[in-house]
Amino acid sequence: MHGPNWLGAALFLGVQLRALWPVAAVEVHTAKEVDAVNGTNLRLKCTFSSSSPISQQLSVIWNFQPEDQSSHEPVFYYLKEPYEMTTGRFKERVTWDGNIQRNDVSIVIWNLQPSDNGTFTCQVKNPPDVGGTVGEVRLRVVQKVHFSEIHFLAVAIGSACVLMIIVVIVVIFCRHHRKKQQEKRTEVADTELTEKEKLQIGEEKEATPLDD
Picture 1 (cartoon, rainbow, N blue to C red):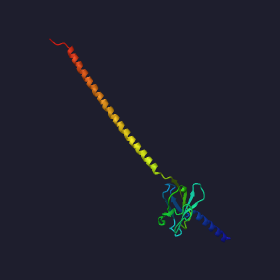
Picture 2: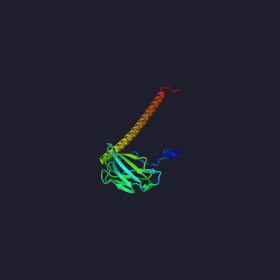
Picture 3: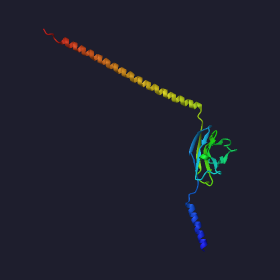
């Protein structure tokens, strides 16, 4: 009877210690959202941290889920060496741009297309660390701005600047002209006042009788 009791206690203690012991896991880090222009190339950055040394069995899995929430599609796979997709939308469009020794498992997507809108996931397993977080980055592919649109925008901005300069010059000219007119009116008023004063003084002299 003592044997089974001791065995049960040992198993129970083992379960409790396992629950208290921290589970080894891989933490994956990516940007939450990325915007890119249609037709360009994009580096999707993904890094990881692990409590264990880098293993020869370390693996990296990149997947993609379109915006319509359909099934996940494989994008890229790494195990000892990079493996590019031979089928699917990312065939010959994804290349390895990471460095395992620097905990970098990034990839480059070439010639972005509107159909690439969606969520990319980056998962890293580093045995014995096989669990942990999965990096998710949402990609938004925006349309390329045409040259005509850029030209029109530049002309509009340039015209606005020129118009603003003209308005400033006109305002300065008007203020200067108004100041000159006011100075001229003041000068004329002073001249007229002086003439009136002289005339009044002359009249006063004429009105004053001379002493015999």
